[in-house]
Amino acid sequence: MRDILLAFDAGTFEFDLQLEGDTERDLRGDDGLLTAVIISLFTDRRALPDDALPDERIGLPSDRRGWWGDILPEPGDPLGSRLWLLWREKDMDVVVERARQYADEALQWIVRDGLVGERRVTASRVQGGYLGIGVELLPLPGTTDRAREWNFVYDYKNSVPLRMLAPGV
Image (cartoon, rainbow, N blue to C red):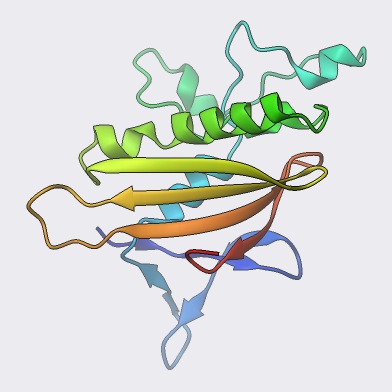
């Protein structure tokens, strides 16, 4: 599967497209599902009806967020994750576990659509307000594909990824 590469810019804390080639008229590509993982984790998925919204807890109007295409009559897999719901949470073990669940939920489609055989998602506290999110995608049985692994540091107090670490870090 070939996709457009979203590259992380540590200076701006953003993912962006990159150009390549002699004339820099081509978009840089990715064969390893990185772009799919980035969009799945760091795009705001619409909150479920029973989710406690961060804004409601401080008296602001509620915003369920999400991609407008998810409300179509026959929606497919909802896009993104609910990691954004953590932005007003305290630094507790239950928040780390919810982050892992939200990240795992966001990546379910990769297995369901048959792109990989299995996914493994971890979450850990890096320091107050920062989570480590690890993603490992295992190939389909009987293929020659390799396992893929990424680690991200996520600032859940500001709902932004801070950096992407080398595999295994």
